[in-house]
Image (cartoon, rainbow, N blue to C red; front, side, top):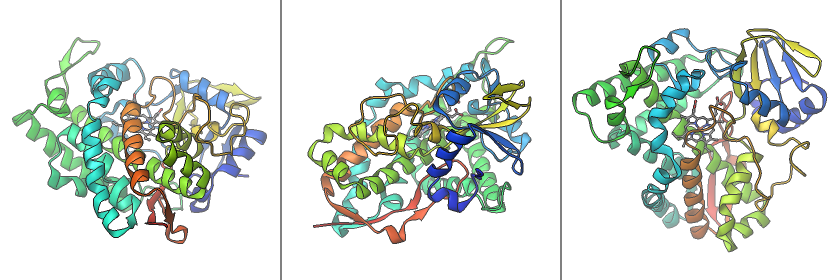
Length: 394
Ligand code: HEM
């Protein structure tokens, strides 16, 4: 059995491969693509905590990123402490539970407005008309991106993450989209420097970063890094989580009935979707020293994938892990990662997902998903759908 995160067939159902790896090769080596993978919960947790051994500083995806990118727009997700912590401190306040709770009304009104035409037509495309647009409006509100630019920027984001099945090259269309996006963010930051607003980017322009040489303002590249990271992270994953939720609730009528009759179980359903089909399948790291695990030695410099999606289905940790159970008792799943890099936007993602599911299931207590027309995204890490056609059912 081999793990190939670029395979379109694998994207359809990665879970049998993960189970095999946990049982037979908990430290898996892929010679051709030159990486290692940890698949068991306990190993993924331990590695996620040990940032000085499992470094993020050379990127967290399987495909190697252009080294120039780390210089032109440094992002905290591709840094190790203490630099990552100093960067994270600058944006933490915008994503606390308190700050996020303040966004709930806006999240609800955006959701309601997006749902209106779907209700009128008795259905539509859940991703294109709702789940891709809701997180986009919320994160771009926070960053202060003008309304007219949002959909173009969102389309570039999707395109920049698209991957061909033949690994591990990043296709030209993705490189071009990334270049367009980067150039947009540089213009955006230049504009913010001229006319600082009270949005998050305006605050970052005025902020000071703690460094070994003392505090200093952020460079243009660091500001662009924040826009690019928050823009992408705030958009892609919530879109996928919500689409996965709607497909799973369609496939599990009992779970859907539970959510409709007792909306109090929606937060639990969000956690279960995150565990059961994690939108972010793995976190990539690079070893700063040799590590031996389960009798296998991984050399210094090895690229190691921490398969959080597999860890979330590990029978050593979760009873009956392949059962989708929206009433599963609270648990520590790894859908938002673990350790110093654990998701900055987790509270925001939870509120967006809860509100969207509350409003959607209230208007569509019964619906059918057209499984024959589901469209899957083909990214090396993000797992979910780009099209989910559905209609109201009697
Ligand atoms: C369901 C939705 C989401 C999922 C599944 C998710 C998942 C993750 C995961 C797994 C990581 C860890 C990456 C690593 O260890 O290398 C992460 C980090 C991060 N996430 Fe999310 N995320 C979601 C939503 C969001 C949202 C809405 C934002 C909004 C800004 C966000 C911003 C970030 C940032 C900035 C980081 C990097 C943190 C750091 O490096 O310290 N995420 N996310």
